[in-house]
Image 1 (cartoon, rainbow, N blue to C red):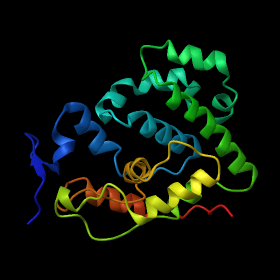
Image 2: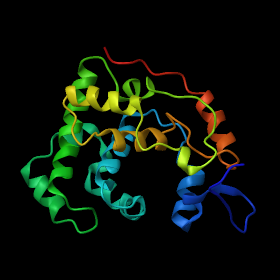
Image 3: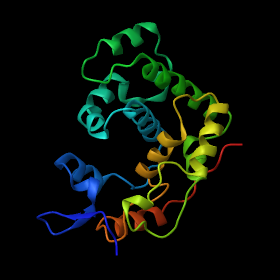
Length: 207
């Protein structure tokens, strides 16, 4: 028997966390676990997951549009050119999470990702090389916080110059971007997510 599902007034069973607030319902139903392969989109997710560290994801959802405005739509070339004036600008922006280390990490990671592209690789290639297909978890207790794959990916990215990419942060990103599907067995979203994941062609991995 699956435990951890919640059924709301619409009669649809959801992962319990995804039924806790209206914002989480929308995120759970339309985004979480659905495949993401675009480089800009993956950079945005990586950056927001880093900013979420120590906070609730709901805080990030509330501020996401402000983050997009502050970080120039997460366009890599734009963020990579940010300097000290931009750091000061972001630290003064009350609409986002103001944390100097995380702001600097976003800039560092944009530059590292451009270096990865110059070397012929992609973030999608690295991330989707860790793809895991398996049975649905039957309870929230079966959903890990880290995996050997997220730990190995963290080490790989750090060697390539990325920062704020720990195994827990990366696994959260892998879940959010569909690299793994941790929707619980019986969640109404899971069949849709699995169909979308089945249609993803594995991006090329960096050398």
